[in-house]
Length: 454
Image 1: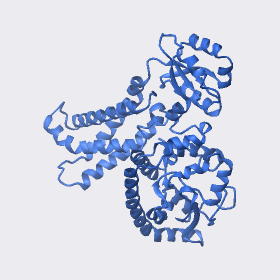
Image 2 (image 1 turned 90 degrees about the vertical axis):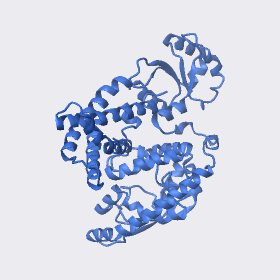
Image 3 (image 1 turned 30 degrees about the horizontal axis):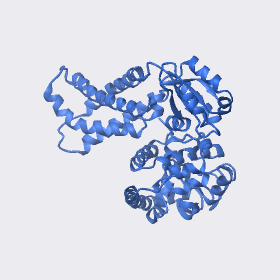
Image 4 (image 1 turned 60 degrees about the vertical axis):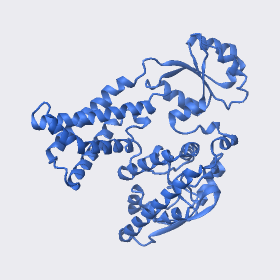
């Protein structure tokens, strides 16, 4: 339905692979001065094919197939440069560490970097936008109101990559009060798509009156506002939530997925433990230069179904507040210089491997709160505690999608927390092994690059 979805990502992927192959051919042309020699190309295409697969994976981890990059290109040049430099370093290590390849790629890699950068820029910034912009933007009517409705209208109407536009926006109350006027406006605009807030009181009787409306002698297409909001933003509409939503969308975890997830958690917990034991003496020395204080902190955090768990982390602040109900800046507790590095690299989280191995915590899931702050948020935000219907995680859908205020790597306000909650409920609704893999890959990217979005 929305340009920037799976089809667009697939088109980009195919285009990238073609660019990789074409860049290799042009590199050999520049390097050896021959238009085409099959033997030379054959010697290179084998090992480079492995690199092409790795490079495409790095592109994915870097978010270069993500919806925001597909729809907006303001940050794309910087992302491409960073990613391609990383890919060339990866290629150099590949040829250096794997014996028997029989190639001397130093000069080739330098040429390839220049050629591939130029072709990727040409493909991503010039050719793909022309192929992906829809030829026709269909007029649609939106029957909804509120901040989220305004957010959807702004996003869709200001971006030509969406295949529809909202010339008519009306509140549910106005639509119910004057359905005949709405019908006339729909006909005048030629709208055949009606996006409706299905949770608005009394909206059901309006649907039969609108269904037969058409300017092209075909029935109107109805789309729930909640579904479109979710597709556009990859988070749920909090204003549309009600208790029945959780009964419908947050069911018991399938046994196969539960077993696989637990197995991955155990393996990941063991690896986290090894990293913790290796890093501990170095963290202790670094913290010693900043002054006295414990190397680890203990916190009481919220677990699945509002249970309590003890979490252990490398200390990143000057004080250890076990049940703090404040954000950074609301007290005299501050992040230390060593703590800033630990947080940016996520190394402060690794001592939680014990909670992961015990099953109190998962590698992936809604991030849990310190007990005091969790209670404060539950009092101020409706349905907040429903995020604990599943086992909380160290990283999650919100962590790889949400952009916080400058300098923050976690929510530091009610509004930011509401946004995180919208992403958390999206995860609850769509959780699966595939989504967990996506989160894991993009978390690795964030740990290395520590940027909100490319």
